[in-house]
Length: 203
Image (tube, rainbow, N blue to C red; front, side, top):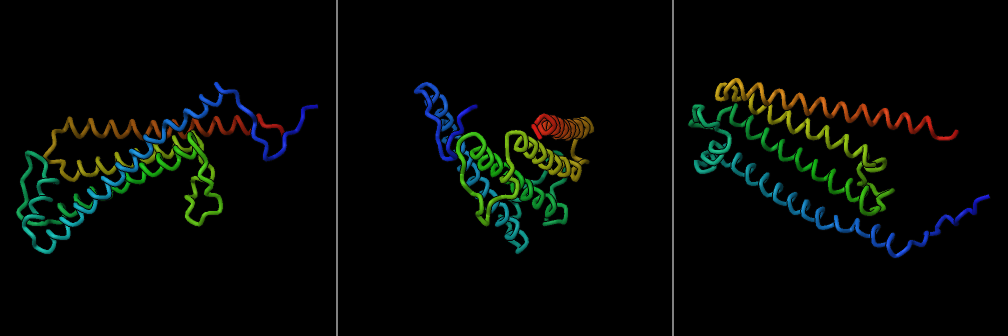
């Protein structure tokens, strides 16, 4: 009969195993770098929002900055804040938010999965998805987030469809479809793996 270890017993690792296992902390600077990237996105979001509000209030400099951002080369540049311009700016803001959400999933989920437990159980602000996160779940959520980001970019292209070559529209649609199919394939594969694992577990 195998000896049962106490619940709080920590197995003793050899120096080599300890070195290899501790190497996971080399990822810490990567996650800290992503936090800095998140700060850049927050700053960019507020700059764009400030310009949108300024343009709505009649500020010419803010209007010109927005038009420089949303006007596609080859299209007619509007002279005032139009509904289409507002829509494009808002879609850009949503795009920033979705990329920021993607960063949060990578930072929190990746650190929890590959580096160290954060002991958030019972915390009122613990993300719902973090309670059952693993490498497969994280990969599926990242794939779906990328599909959402791609959808925003495709919608922005379709709004300005007249300024794009049909080949560009077709190429972007195909790329988005590939992202969607890839996400579905990842989710389906994860479902098969999870189902197989559950069936193989002793009852």
